[in-house]
Image (cartoon, rainbow, N blue to C red; front, side, top):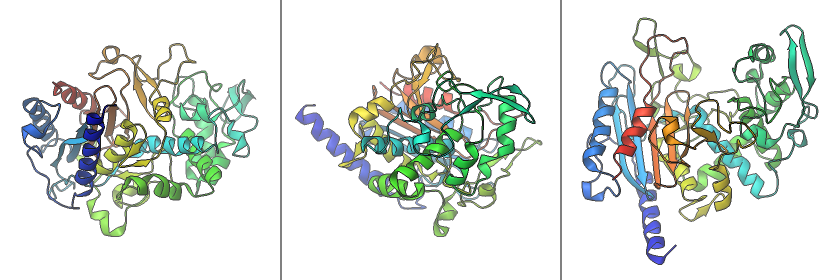
Length: 433
């Protein structure tokens, strides 16, 4: 990297820190781009305006309550907007630093925690889970029978940390043929545990639906187990590890498993679509009590609250190869590995969602944008959350894109709001010169 490029990146990193930390909680968002056209490197302002217009329409009276979008390129905040309202009554305008339940976007954070311990020699990806947690030394696979009388056989491969990180552990994931395994797991109810230790103990009695390393099946249990591994290997609670080793160094001041009482007014309402075709509050504890913990334990699979500026700092750290503002969390080659497809053992080596994407460590990896049916780049990496939150980083374009909403889609096929991720990313990429 030449001296001029190094200097530019340092300047942009400083600008990122200033922009993302200077936001005053509750400060109103502008309805116009946050900087003049000349200050938007690498984006066409007229095309970016199409994104603004579309998100305004998506958060109109018959749409989502509100949204926050944030775009960065070359480490600079290019566009950071709030749309619509924070509350179901549509009285309080959405603010750019409002707080969202990011659910499964937590998984990338958990993966970074695991990889930090790998770099320190406290973990290895090919280690069996049984090295750290009791009860996993002889994993069993459901071979038939019923939930009342399951027939089990020994797994043909050990259950490794790598299998957990890549969702190839074989746990029930709602795939065809998983029905009985799902029923068995529901009866054991690991998610009803009071802490990660209890979750792991219950999971030790859950049979696999397939042999480790033989399929991709997206599940949350794997990341909960890894969160417990972080506790065992580090000697800290999972929440403390994240706060001390990730959130504090990155100055992610509004990210955590609960929101302080003084800041709970910034939490966006969580909606779902009622049978009458009207938005209503979701039937969850955190919807009724915004800012309350999403789980009884610190969920590594989906327990975090965060903001667009906080998560942008985390994602920019990955895009910059593991460091931000002079604080290095991971080595550059470790991040390269995270952003690489790890499903080469499968045929085809792709995830269950698209023939055009594989899976790295903590998120999808785009293999073929055309086959995926969405604009992007090979090597693009990211993930989403259950309540309509999305992020993506693109090393080729040096691009970071975040879209945060708070809506739980219906799972019964009934009338609902349209999903926005596909069109959002298309509009972002169409705005590149």
